[in-house]
Length: 368
Image (cartoon, rainbow, N blue to C red; front, side, top):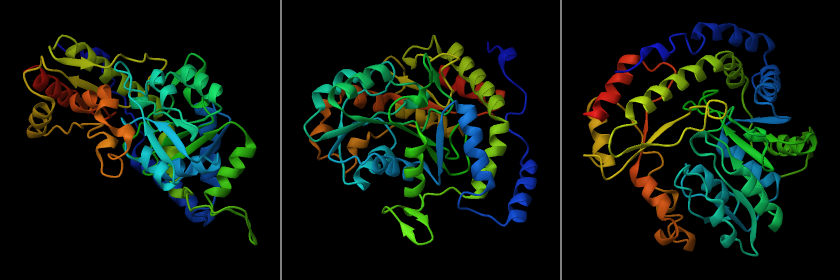
């Protein structure tokens, strides 16, 4: 029986009509982009909420990843994970960098630090780990390797909004961290992203690069790109920030119910919880093992037939796509854990407005 008492019924997000005054303010200022008032307010508000020193907003996280690599002048080879969204590796190719893939940890599905050192070559300049599903990487182990070999660390923190570890915000680790504010994320601006950086000098370089490299009307200092966030996106971010705590409580309640109800189902494994003070409950992945009556794709189809849209996230692996599969590091023998996870993973619906009836329906289908 599902204990409904832990299910949060408060509204997770402000009503959409509350967005109208924000639009009116944009219309009154007549500033639609280029670092307007809402852009500046959102950067400041996010620094406070996320407990980071500097943040630079972007139109999306992919451009932010591309810019982060350019900010640190990364070249040669970068060690990364095959178990991620393709934007992680695509950002490397866009910069003419060779991705080198290593396997993942079976418990967290994050990059396995014990596999990194053997992948380092004289051409290696950086490590790009991913905080998969919002669960923090082993940041201390990764940093130790980076320090020994003088490598930069750029975290793809697309899933890690508001995530904390023992030493504070997980976004404070590495040289840079990149957030996604896509519509599917815990916190979103419809489309958007950001780079978290440690000092004002680096932020200035980032801000120059995302604005074509322009520093004045007559001066361009770098071959930058147009990565700026619009005022409308920033205003929506300000509105979303008002409801983030309620949204996280709803997600935590759903996560708790899933874990409680699925814990005894043979062949269904939930990833270990990162804990209330660490997790942001951005995803709820399960691994469908051989003990379950259906294979993963069979359960995926069964849910779909009942109007439930789960995601095989991440499947296929990045290394299965044609632009990567010829790389030596993409060999199946190099990535056994990642391959197994990709073939078993299924992310169940988790979002603030998920109704209790829908949640019960999902759980009952899996149990049946």
